[in-house]
Length: 147
Image (cartoon, rainbow, N blue to C red; front, side, top):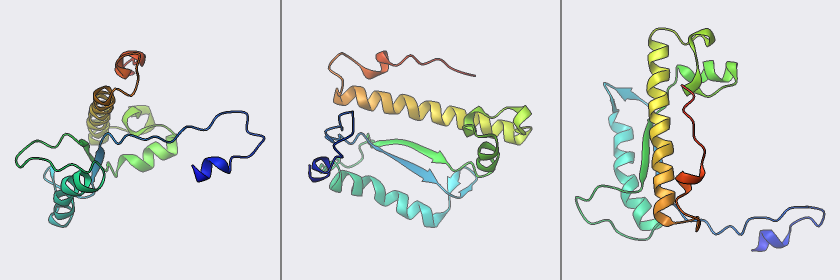
């Protein structure tokens, strides 16, 4: 509220209330070895569900229950990042004409699948907390698959 009171007088739009509702978190796998993270990162990733439950949602998960707060576990797609930056487009929309050929193009397809799944998980999580009183948020978004 303190920051909202410091709003410049000449702003011609309303600032959001800032009533955030956490819907989950995303894990980034930095180093992958045969489709699994290296051990150092694995230790940190093992701590995340408990810390998120305890400090963010302030509710402990029952033992052996699937973690409903992890929205995605994404690879870093190191090889695609520079290419996407150079072409100023998302990694998951790179084409062979952009330089994504061979194994790079397979990485683009995997990246697209990962981000599409993340998008669906975010929409599902939003629907669960009923942020929008007009019905599910996923029904309000006009989503067309660009691939």
